[in-house]
Length: 365
Image 1: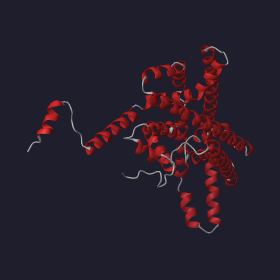
Image 2: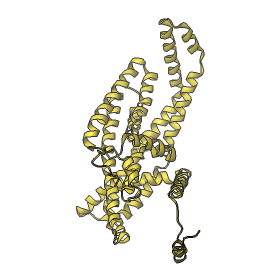
Image 3: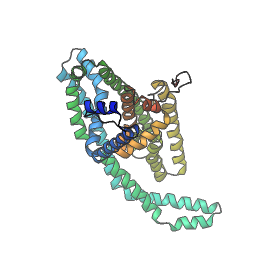
Image 4: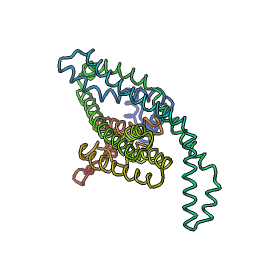
């Protein structure tokens, strides 16, 4: 039996289609899958854009400060671009020279790695584990696997810097447009000032995270360089730069950054020197990442530790190493966007690192 009232409503609104909550969820999930798949497929285009946007957010306050001091926009842009270009050029020169020298000396390090393996075999045998020592001594491909891993790491590292020119070029155009963006946003939002406030909130949150994390990463990288210079480990500047970039990767970045420096200390010297390097890396990260960073950043960025770790995996899978570095600011942006709508605010609360007591929870009425 057809409800006359329902029939009348459908006649008056022939274009209205009723969608059940289950269908709405399925459509939303399907849209999410399509968007993620598209981002992963367009990784080569998206990654330089996001890296440029990250640099632009860091540099834009300097542009505003120079303009307030009376400098013209073009001269301010010139100064900022000059500083950024010189910094990136120094990074490329240091990384390029170190990688070239390391590649040319890789056979020498292979011999040293064989010596370290022989030392380990002799130590195991002296402790009474002869069978294990004989088995390890017979595994001649261990050194080959180690060298293959080192070559793969060097190739991946070189690939991260292959798009530096495009990143810098995109950043230049973004900075040129940045000064007019607030006026454009105000014109677009018009009677909806909430959108403008949301954009300001995103910019301020990302800028705060980017600047503070950059300063702390500089201290971490400088500490690693000093440590390895004291131990006279080869390519200390390269391992310090790696520590700087990997410090942006939450949770596992500090551990990953220690592997090449400690590994080089082991190959170049002995287990004792590698152990000192491990202790030094641990102290550096304890001081800067566990003591200084929480005090400087206050309560953090409002994202739970679990969400930070999951976002690291997700963005790393979608966008590669750069996605891992930018996982926190990207998740912050998503969280801020979700906060503005009542239909998605619940998901923003799930991403939040705040604790909600019973007095803060909905009463269910």
